[in-house]
Length: 339
Ligand SMILES: C[S@@+](CC[C@H](N)C(=O)[O-])C[C@H]1O[C@@H](n2cnc3c(N)ncnc32)[C@H](O)[C@@H]1O
Picture 1 (cartoon, helix red, strand yellow):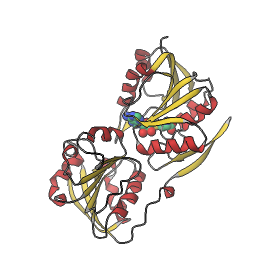
Picture 2 (cartoon, protein in one colour):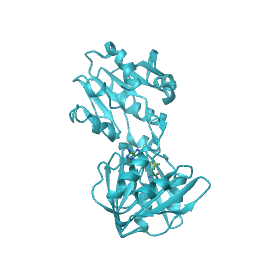
Picture 3 (cartoon, rainbow, N blue to C red):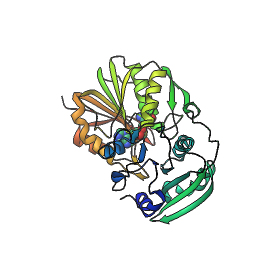
Picture 4 (tube, rainbow, N blue to C red):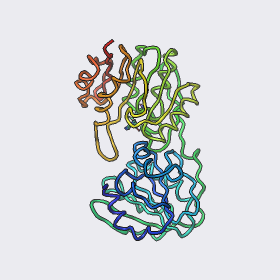
């Protein structure tokens, strides 16, 4: 069981018999056996898939928006990696709680729980650290009267990105990759002007949708599918496509779990973080499986930090890997599936 879940389990008497909202939990022994009156909000499709067998649709919500659960006795936020996302979540959770209800925050020390006091101070009083064990802490505050109603527009940011051939409006939310700006690696990938193959193209780990938006305009014969594990990213990708008049299919996928069929091209700035840790396992699994989704002669085009040892993995699974562009920090690789 996750350390944060263990600390919650130790404090089970605090939550007994309560109608509770649990936000951003992991999938583990605790969350697979939640009391009937608990509701879960997650923005992680992996968690949604992992808990969908144990919770019905009414009790499990995968979305960028918190479900409007009524008559709550308390809420628990399991600290997300990005502090802005914790603020975004709290702004949605607090208006659901009546004055006097407890709000709990739990998380790992290296995951930013040390900021709990400051985060909770914006929403309540009687802030208290209740427990500390296994490098985790459990905090509580009591919610006050008069929480400001949540407005998504207050959190959504729109920026104009200028490319030599076009200007794009990028819509993003807190905690979405490269919120409000263009990542240096993605920029390098977009500097490459070689056309993409006509037909279906997959944008894997689409974030706010910048790659598919720019590339779809440059490649009018390509049709884009955009996938991401993060509900906030998916919402932003839809908004970015719409703001730029680009059509595309946007849907959740954990890795390639929900990607079906074969594509003429796959583009990506693949993730190499999971939760708190640096981790290339998602990208490795992606290279391993993506051949099944590439047409013969289909192109994989990715950008990555130069220090990541991706070329041998790409060559093992797809084919000869060429460097299309590079800077001191990033490389754009291309490989063509055997045809
Ligand atoms: C480096 S960002 C790139 C975002 C966007 N393509 C861009 O260029 O700005 C990687 C993206 O992969 C997503 N991601 C992380 N783990 C994933 C997984 N298991 N399956 C699908 N997407 C994942 C993240 O949410 C993030 O949006």
